Length: 236
Ligand code: UDP
Image 1 (tube, rainbow, N blue to C red):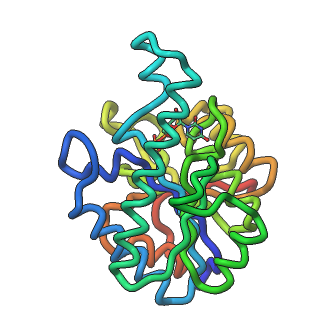
Image 2 (image 1 turned 120 degrees about the vertical axis):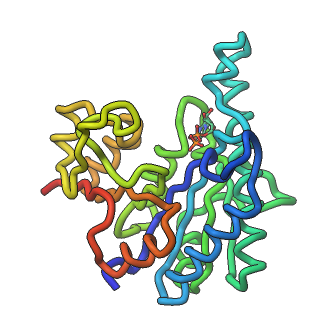
């Protein structure tokens, strides 16, 4: 296998599947199966999941709510998704630990770096819930930061598009996909990969990112085996 320890970033919106809100059990099941395939290979798996299917801080702000309050609500939303995912993974026969950026002691462990690494070494899937625990961040920044902290080999950003394009492929039919691109080029061309905080963290710490379509069966496993899927972003 090409990657021994991965950080998989899933968006909250992806969990909605075909629904307009909340969590689609079918999608959850699909993700569980995909994750099991790589876990069975012996890959150490850390996961960050977003909360956009339930709540986003910026939305709250536009409707007049205090931004920070909204961000904390967003963080709690990610924890709900994380709990659903944890439960699905355990039903799928995997060992998991949920670590939260905000202390919620009766539900999960707080994030402690050394402990997270130990869990991974023991083959447990570690889900990082509640983001970094601070407002004004996103789960993309959480994915970058936690990946660096637990020394993951790569951030795998599972989305519904199959990579980074020259323009938005849903709007521009002439858009073409990059197989590989440097951090610098993404920056110069202002391509949308992650928010800047998350992106810069990866760049400065030389942590490669792969953007790929998580909804295609087998993609995650192929990636871990070294197949060229999606777009690889590196320092080059
Ligand atoms: N959030 C935050 N700090 C963090 C992570 C998340 O404040 O460290 C809040 C923020 O309001 C964000 C929301 O949680 O909008 C949900 O996360 P995100 O939008 O990243 O989810 P996704 O788009 O991946 O579903």
